[in-house]
Amino acid sequence: MKNKVLKKLKSAEGKYVSGEQLSEYLGVSRTYIWKCIKELREEGYVIESSPKVGYKLTFIPDIINSKEIMTERESKILGKNVIYFPQIDSTNNYAKKIAQEGCEEGTVVIADLQTSGRGRLGRKWSSKNKKGILMSVVLKPEISIEELQIITLAASVAVVETVKELIGIGLGVKWPNDIILDGRKVCGILTEASMEMDKINFVVLGIGLNVWHEKEDFPDELEEKATSLSIYMKQKSQLNDIIIRRSRLIIRILYKLEELYDKINKGDLGSITTLWKKYSVTLGREVLISVKGEQHSGIAIDITNEGKLVVECTDGSRKEVLSGEIYVKGLLGYQ
Image (cartoon, rainbow, N blue to C red):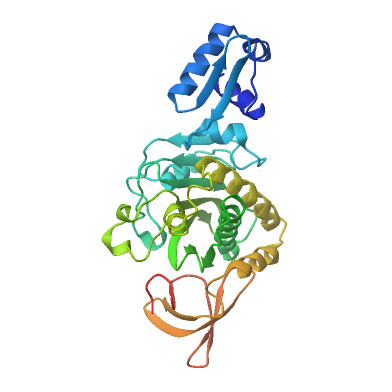
């Protein structure tokens, strides 16, 4: 019921809503409405009240929870069900668990803090309480195992376009799963799948975006490799000009991801790779690739519709890379 009160106040767009209207709309007493208002205020929402006029929502705090996402959701499937944890070991781990138990496609798991978050190749993902977006989405794509990489590329595009739309910051994508801001990593994508033979049972798509982190929040070894939206905006003296709400970022990421996901399920992989190329900071640059213990250097020249990176190697060979480590000259400390 509290969620419905919040939704009604938000829909008023800064205007007063009378207690009588809320009471009739929800079919409850005014006393119960007051109880809901009190609880919302305790959560950080600023709600003005005026005798005989009603209630007006004047400030929405930067909080993320099921209520915030589900009441403002713009996507049809993704985020229809949202599970929130103040703290969890890993949103991907929990999402895999419920996916194995048969949860609905589009279920989203979010948290304010991860204690055992991880990135690609099992690397630790560092997080700080209430400073980032830690989100996992359960998907059941109609694609082959060879096309799985396209999910990661689509998620990267969704994040880049959302940040540009809401905050005005241009990000770049580094193959296969890093999102770059000012030469440093601001977001990582972790795609994990359950497969049998040649069939994908489900995919868990993890997104970790650094929003409010300060430099001291990162471990020493990441000080020159990681950044956040707020660090960059402070450097550009923009932080006080733009309101950042993590819930709004999540809502728009899910909306854009759903648009791209629909294209994937219709077999239109080319439109995803075209968009990815538009934001790429990998293509046309010198790279070093490490696959199964072998290293090759060359120029990244393209990606295939399945998401493989095409590298023109210095020895004259051409390689299509689906997995492994890649270093791009000038990014993340690789010179």
